[in-house]
Length: 186
Image (cartoon, rainbow, N blue to C red; front, side, top):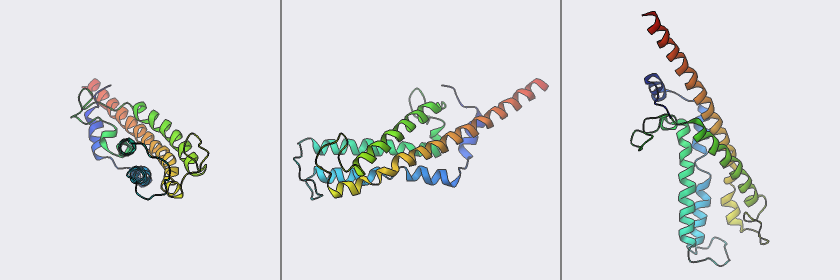
């Protein structure tokens, strides 16, 4: 991990993003929310169409899965914020260093593929992931429908991030070359 050059840090702080990238990145945060709300309601025995036995740990599981999915979705915002390129200084060990692009892009693309397949199975397949014989309740399918968009939105946000990183890398290389030439000339 390397420290960013002052010019890169300044460019990241003042950069603008294409409107489509900002829209897609913010939209990618929303799809897990309805399913999280449904899971919590189901685990609290609210009438959401779930007639199966609910184990004692279901509320904890629903809360943990909701926090995990929402937390991971919120990380997508780093694709359009400075902390997606340079780790915040308050983070131990990595604070102030560049975010290696593979750390963001690799998991995001893998998650995009997984989320797309999982959402397809839940909604279009009409059964919980893993293939139970009994179809899912309509309320569950309705709240999982937005998940169909999560994977593709995440893939598009990742593309926008890759374009951003490529643009910043070119800018940084140009500025480093100009500084090196200026130093040699002096």
